[in-house]
Length: 311
Picture 1 (cartoon, rainbow, N blue to C red):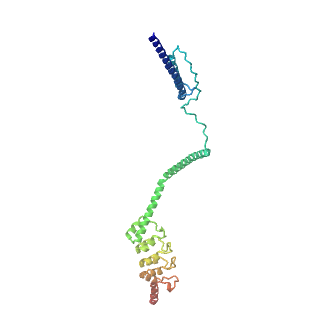
Picture 2: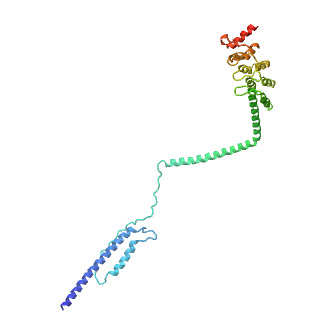
């Protein structure tokens, strides 16, 4: 009888322990369900009103309730735990919020107006440049239409300039052969250089009496003056070309013509110590334009003395 009582007592104790463990496990499951449900509210990625929203908390709550209902015994009178209400919370969303109304910074409208003015100015400038290019193309076309005449006149001027340069170069070098060839190209005998020197001035410096004679025969001006008011006779006297001086005097050169320093060809020949030219001019009756004896060169004074004693 005693063993039977002991076994019944042990069975009751085991049953009571099992009931306590089961009740403890059920309470733990319910608490975990509540915690999961709370966490689910913060894990939702869509709002309640959005289409296709998926609530993780709801799914877990359903599953936990089903498992709890299966595990909960029907025969025991368990004290239900008070329902824990989770306050509705606004679920966080990853969707970008619409931007608020943008407010222009101070001075933005002025900058915008300036940019618009610059754009208008660029357009107007482009149209103006286009018009200029059209006018330029028209002028080019007109020039091309008359280019043949322009080219002919330019070629003629270049040929005349080349002939004149060839003539004065031959005259200044006393190259009679080259001078004859240059005359075949009909150069201008009255043309002058930058210092108003004529071809006869160059021939007087060169010293060729034959070239001077040909120029005089073709109408060269014997008393032409350069920028210093000097005639070809002044040039020949300074260079000492007595033969050229004689040809010029025979052609009507003014023997007493003075330059800008009030000097005659006779005085210039004396200052240059050209005795032959100075003697020729003294014999032809050249004067000194009223210069005093102290102003005259010694060669001129000696020629004047010689002329007095020769008389």
